[in-house]
Image (cartoon, rainbow, N blue to C red):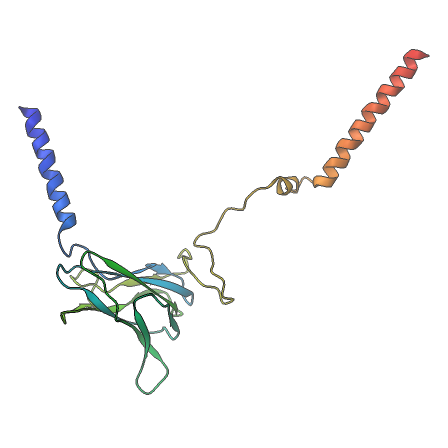
Length: 222
């Protein structure tokens, strides 16, 4: 009897947990990755746009760039049109706008861009507007503890580089990679012998052994 009660309680608990996870709108926020980067880095960002509606599709996203970002490039994504928004009467970049796309209910989109981070440490906030085909607009511009939080990136000198683009146009590794140790590298580990030196040493030892054997044979024969 007690065992049945325990099993029933576990099933009820599991159902409540699953219900909380599957609840519409739970944690379905517009987010930006990575959430940590280095000051002044040329960073490739990914905007994740989930659709938390049940009957309408997301068709547009407006992203306002944080103050201090003066350079940005938008990556082409199939099915979407993207444009760089500039401040009125100037060349300063103020935001990015994705239109003509479609994110169905229970789906999400990944939008990419590159931006030069501000030359300072601290938090930068990305304010985003998510537009739906029925005319609804969700404003992701609130504080981190609000129902509609704006994505935030922390700029720190200690941030691990992830998807950072070098000034030479080369993508830097996401994390420092361990150098592979090869037999040749092992032979040059500071012992003073490379492969050729080691081979000569082995050959010399063999010749010495042969000479010693010949000398012993002559002595016995004499």
